Amino acid sequence: MKVNITTKILIGFVLGVILGQVLYASLSPEAAVELGNKFQILSKIFLKLIKMIVGPLVFCTLVVGIAKLGDFKVVGRIGIKTLLYFYLATILSLIVGLVVVNITKPGTIQSWPIPAAGTTTGIEGKKMKTIEEFILHIFPDSLFSALAENEILQIVVFAIFFGIALGSIGDKGKLVIKAIDSIAEAVFKVVNYVMELAPFAVFGAMTAVVASKGLGILVSYAYLMLCFFGGLLFFIFVVLWVICLVMKIDYWKLLRYIKEPLLLSFSTASSEASFPQTIAALERFGCSQRIIGFVLPLGYSFNLDGSMMYMTFATGFIAQAYGVHLSLEQQITMLLTLMITSKGIAGVPRASLVIIAGTLTMFDLPAEGIALILGVDPFLDMGRSATSVAGNAVATCVVSKLEGEM
Image (cartoon, rainbow, N blue to C red):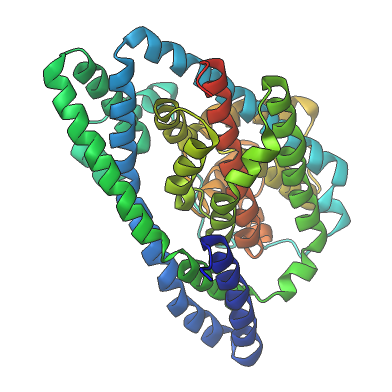
């Protein structure tokens, strides 16, 4: 009997947890971390391979999709709908994070020793870009540099112009479109090969995380994790479901289609890791290829719902831990600020912490407070990565529905 990829990933997850705990319990902390990191090379190799194919995959699928549209007006219409939905989802996820942290108050109910002033966290606050800097960053100096650095937004911008140009030059353009479509098929074949490594990547990632922290940390952070994961589950099973209900999308069927991407992103703590699988799942669900190729790449920079929720939740938690009261006006300001400054962050591990560090500085909260969540962050990252995948899948379905292409 052939074992499917979901089962393989689950086996890798369980074996990684078991081995990691054995290493943590039987070796010194330093030796456990060192040996665990050796296993993590499996996860690092897998993520590098994913990054290797994400750029070409986005470029090829988007160029072909846009070329079939062949009209700036159509692209503009889809783009406006997509961005409006992204900002709606961002507001909802930020609000859920604020509401959950204010109701559950994990920073006051469960407390730890406050990190000393000057404690090194290894996380530097991200300098908030001005609107001018953000806009200029979107446009590439070179397609090749954008591909080399995996700047997804820049790849999207070039692909839009190139796709429209191909669609407007008639038969000559069709030859190039056919060639790029063939390249896309070849890239998807590479994806199939890379995905065979996913269970080993999950095994290595879980071994490293558990060997470093031990499962005991889940007990000491039990209430914090319960609050945050409760918020994530509320967002996934209530907020996204209501959105799909309004749009007349079968949400529970969609979840069945994307269960493998969700599991892979949860296990590797990276929403990018499941990008190719999410494309394939949405195509099977019934979304058009051109909408998927346009919306999904943008979503991985503009619509990371799990990370958005984490930013307000973690900032509120740190403020509570230090006994700092954030007024309603300050929390609204935080929400509006994060709506702008969080855009363009990568769907990779710990990207959210950089934004959180900058937010703490902005509101005169101790930057050392990040040390309070560093220990459990790898586990929290799993939940928010999976949530972002679910959010982007819903975003693609919503835009497909609005365009009448479901």
